[in-house]
Length: 410
Ligand SMILES: C[S@@+](CC[C@H](N)C(=O)[O-])C[C@H]1O[C@@H](n2cnc3c(N)ncnc32)[C@H](O)[C@@H]1O
Image (cartoon, rainbow, N blue to C red; front, side):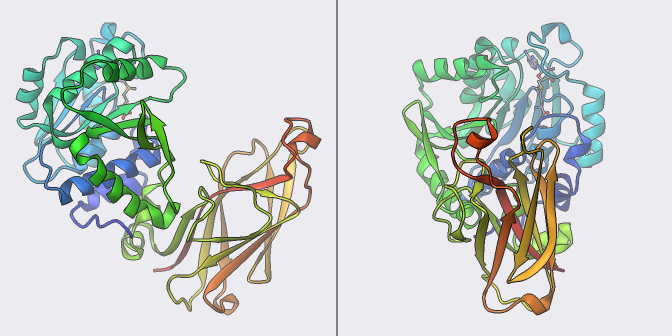
């Protein structure tokens, strides 16, 4: 199932997909934006109404996305201490009203129905927030100061003004630099919880809470939207509640072929993340280790993959893989020979830091036959981390795949 996204303005797609957000200084994992968009869509389906708000906006990277998710008549509220940086206890970010306003005008089009409020969240009360937002809030992002006291204060504020079915999005939950966030969240859950808020998602550096009454509905809806790319969605446990704890794919992985073509220039035919062992989107023919939350390592000299094509294709295809190799001082370079449906393509050479990178393969129409695409990877050096002297892992790790898209010229 792909995302509907019919009601979102073109500006949202330009911001999310065409490099808009990269022009705004700030912090936002691609998967966190996907989670927000999926929940926004589920809120619409459930008739959840309200404003959107953020405490701690810096230059607006996430806040602009929230503004672009507003429906007619909905208000957005940006709260930051801005020039009162003496109140910025942990010096994370540095709100700036002029830059924020400029970014809003550039990416949202105007600051109509946007309240930009200079305030210390510790000195803010629910009635202030209600006045600024006009309505209860349906998406409330918390990304101000990271002490336990600030975190607890900000979650309680958000909880008090949250619309039924609203979500609270808490940033930096897994950031080792800010342990205060987890402590504040833990204190929130140990105290009286009159609004019955429960964790829903803990991934992509965000913890997302929702009301107990909406949890099941949101979990089911998220599972439906994610399974085409992720396969079965992995659940973990946080404060004795089940949460989705695996990274969300970037938004382009969930788009319909047409929307992908409209904003990215190619029709999307197939998209998978290599994060599940039993994935309907691909078959591991041989040479792979078990899936991990980030993706899958090859294990051995050759690793082979089969991708069932869900739609008949005749034209040439473009395969895009996000991959890396295990590189260590004892193996600073790895060459991988590739074949697609038995045809050799240019080998991939990995060297340097071993960071994930995008690799593209053009597949001529003449190579397509049947209803699947087979890719084989042959490693020119198959020593395990144990043999390479970096850990006691005896698997013969070579290439690691995170995700893949198959596209066709639009
Ligand atoms: C990590 S940055 C926010 C990043 C932003 N959400 C983004 O999308 O990139 C933290 C922000 O919180 C603001 N801040 C710090 N303490 C605050 C407080 N007590 N009340 C309101 N804002 C605060 C800082 O000025 C800074 O802009």
